[in-house]
Image (tube, rainbow, N blue to C red; front, side, top):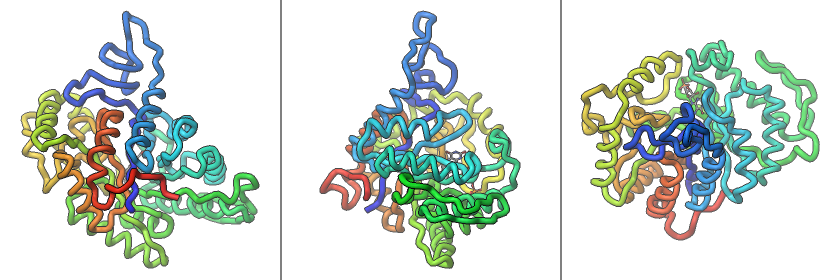
Length: 382
Ligand SMILES: Cc1cc2nc3c(=O)[nH]c(=O)nc-3n(C[C@H](O)[C@H](O)[C@H](O)COP(=O)(O)O)c2cc1C
């Protein structure tokens, strides 16, 4: 049974894609037009954005998602803090915390993870990311080049897994060294968090082969996806392991395809092209090799950016992740998911805007149509 996760917007959320200034949350200053936190009569309303994030998490849980991806960027809330807060108000929802292995020392990573694993009753998992280089990576103070970053990720995972067991563990790596380190009782002995791993370069795939449970890929044209999953499997096999394919994508699903495309047309008519051009200048300065690139320009039509059965304008609408995503009816969305299941995809991370209402919509209208999922609501996997 595939896992389905929803993405929690820890760096702001629009209330409606067709009204760009109508936002929820703190992505940008507190202004009129924000629903929360906002300015009312010249005063900030004091409403905490965290309450909105909690509503999104609960909506995802109620609508039957297994878990939630909580990303981490310089301008986002911290996923550990959000997970710990949300864990107390949810029962089955799992937390896929985005984590770059240089954010903490690996021993502290293991300790904090074990603590969160206890607090959440075993609902922790990770999106292990290694960073895309360029100015964004420098923001974290990280100057290590691409291939070495992945070596460091492998070492961090060697240590993380090595100390998790509770038996003294010694390690002499290039980046990390530990001597007789272990997690003491009562932290030791819990279920190891599942690892969704991102990266598309050869060195990234080799690292996945050693440590990942899932390869998490941004949406790409179908043949590219198949090719990537085959490469990951081949490398995992050399380590006697299996890595399950996962995809992350944006989705706009409505009762009919016409309604979905009408919504996209209205959002497209309100695109702030100055902001799009500014983002294009800032992006593309790293060393990442994955991810389909799209470059919609002023004057382009929505239809110009259809790629196979996907649409490549999501980045232009301000969505994070691949510019490629799904637009169409509930049935078409379920058929697309089935198509990915047919090539072995076993984990899905879906997102849409606004995250609250769309979590309910996708969970209640699309997921039950996915093959084999009509019988019972989803439950967290044991
Ligand atoms: C599904 C997915 C989620 C990501 N989430 C984050 C994130 O939360 N924070 C972050 O800094 N980078 C994130 N990234 C970007 C990665 O750090 C990195 O730029 C990218 O995977 C490039 O790796 P590659 O060159 O090996 O393909 C994400 C990438 C993917 C594919």
